Picture 1 (cartoon, rainbow, N blue to C red):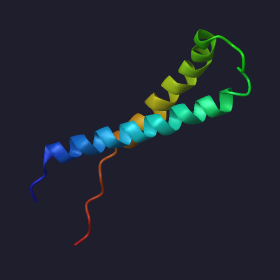
Picture 2 (cartoon, helix red, strand yellow; picture 1 turned 180 degrees about the vertical axis):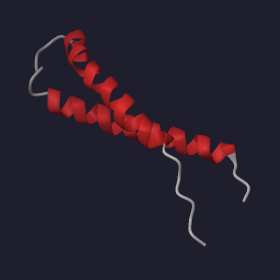
Picture 3 (tube, rainbow, N blue to C red; picture 1 turned 60 degrees about the vertical axis):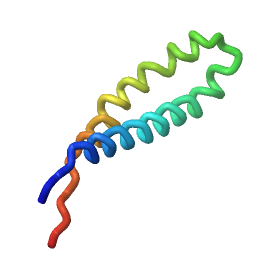
Length: 72
């Protein structure tokens, strides 16, 4: 079977974009009641550490996980 690296790159890009979107919005949703009225830099300071940890330990491993070949 011929594999096309273009499609694997698109899959990686899609998983990273969707994963980052969900992760960042989830973090901001949780933090929003706690940081209401704070300056933007302080809100960002609270959001970045969990965002980096989530990207490194959750989203990136999910994006790099190889697809299981279909059983035929």
